[in-house]
Image (cartoon, rainbow, N blue to C red; front, side):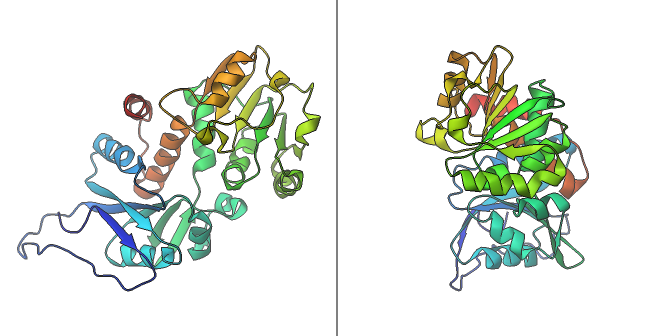
Length: 300
């Protein structure tokens, strides 16, 4: 294989190091894909896409690229010019990916972020698959229907903005957004009100409210912290979802179960499902996600 598995591309000029290939080797080369983020070392995307590729019989190489501030556009353009077929984008570059695109899907336009890039007739195209991944994991893997359910989404940052349209398209009875800064929740609800029944509620107004599905869209669990919502949100039919994931159930999942929720799940399935949606965009092939989730669960 030519090239480097892990590369850093910043604003400065860089030297591309490649290995000399046999000029008479006419075998088709693997399709090239990468994930760009910072940090990126923890990314499971290469493992996920290689498992998908084995299912589909597609020969590809998927690497990680450490992006640097101010160097994202250069990194993508260099990768595409070198024959790259697609790029996955993670924090903190989803907004820059959005701004880089010549063509956007509707859900990317509404979300204001992109996590999947590819080239078409010389133009860079972008989509966001996080919301599709979340809905597929909840409904298909967890067996919980969103239709006609009352939902609470905690948080109003980019992660939440990226999933609201697919959630609303799944037909909930009501979606309530709460956030430490209520103004952000109000603005976010207003942005999506044409897609379904959604409104904001102050965290201190949640006391006594009951929800069928509660989604933690904050990163609080990564710091072993809980969002400032009352424990009495949950009841015997409440399903709880934490968009973060870890080897053990997150603190939010354990807290919800201890306070009456009947079932809780983390975001590993969402990660795999959003990757499957991106894989389908790139290759036109649907893949089986359950075996990939099971394999990753053993090694998370």
